Length: 470
Image (cartoon, rainbow, N blue to C red):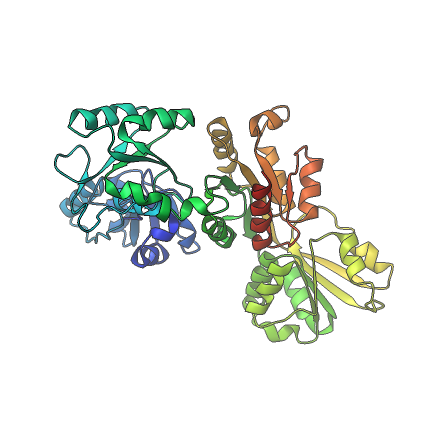
C-alpha cells in the first residue's frame, strides 16, 4: 500500500481502510507514523523486517498491510515485495499512492503544467521536459544543479528547492537556477530536497498558501498517547506545523476486578461520579458493559468532568455532566464543589492509578465518602526514551507540547538529569493548563507557553499566539 508523500492527509481513503482492517501492519522506511493510529486495537504493528515475514504471516491466514512511501510501484521497492508474494502463491493487492514528485510542488504552490507554457514533466535528469522534478539527497544539491546546467538549462531558469518535501512543514526556497545553491546555503538549509525548475516556479509566491500559515516551518513535538494524538496532530498540521510524534504515555486499562464490580454495583447509591480524564470515561464505560450494565447504571448519580475533553467524551456516551472543571487537583476540585451539599454523599472518582490523592480527606471534612477507583495505568512506552534521545541528538524541535503531568514526568525521565537543559537547546515548552505547567517547572523545565483553554484546540492557539510574538 502506498501512503503518499508523508503528509497524513494525503493518504487515500482506501489506504486508511486497509490499515483499519489489517491484523498486521508493517511499515517500510520513509513512511513515518502518521497513519498508524488507524490500526485497530490488538493489531500487530511494527517496522517491515522482510518479505519472508510477510509471507509467513499471510500463510497463517492473517490480513497483512505493508506500507510504502508514495506509490509502491514507483520510486519504491514494492515491486520486490509483489514478486516475492507472487512466487509464494500469496494473494495480494497493490494500492496506489500519490508520489512525492507530484505532491510536494503543488503543496508549495508550484504548477507542474501550465497551458501554453509547460505541457511536459520530467522526473530526474531528463532532456526536453519543460518542467523537471529531481530528488536530491543531502549533500548532493550542488551536484544536481550542476548536472542540470551542464544539460543545457540556463542559469536564469526559475527553480526551487523544497525541503522536507511532502511533509506538513515543507519549506520552499526559490531563485534562478544559477543562484539557488548559494541562496539555500545563506539560510543554512540542509537535508534531502526536491529540486523543481520550470515556469510554474514563478507562480509559487502567489500560490504557496502553506507558507502563509502561522506555524509554517515550526517543528512541534507531540508527547500525547498514541490513541489520543489525532485531533492535536490535525490542528497543528492545519496551521502549517511539521509534527513529530513520540508518545511519552501509554494508557493500559486495568482488569475489571472485584473492586471495580463492587463500585459499579454501588452506583445506585453513589450521588456523584467524578471522571478525571477522557481515558477514564472510555475505560469505565467498557467496564460497565463487561459487568452486564450500561449508562443507565449512572441514573442516580450527578456527573463531574475534569476538563472540556472529558466532558465531550461523556456527551459522546449520551451523558451531560452537571459540572465541568479545569485540570485535576484535589484542592481545585474541592473548591469547585464548595456550593454542593456533601454531608453523607458517596463520591466515586474513576481515574488513573497514581500516588495518594488528597481529595478523599478534603471532602471527608465536609462529610463525604470518597472512593478513588483506579481504572487504568499511565506508563511510559519503552521506545520513548531512545526516540527522544535520537531526536534531540539530531535536529530537535522548536516546541515541545505536553498535555498532562504524566507526559512531562515521563519525558524528563528519558534524559540524564544534568543534560536536560543543554539537550533541549532553544526548544520552547508548551503546556495544556497550569497544573501541567507546574509539574514541568518542578522537574526543571522552563515553561514558555501555557494554554488558557485546557483543550487541544486551546494548546494549538497558545502555540500560534506565541509564534506571532516572536
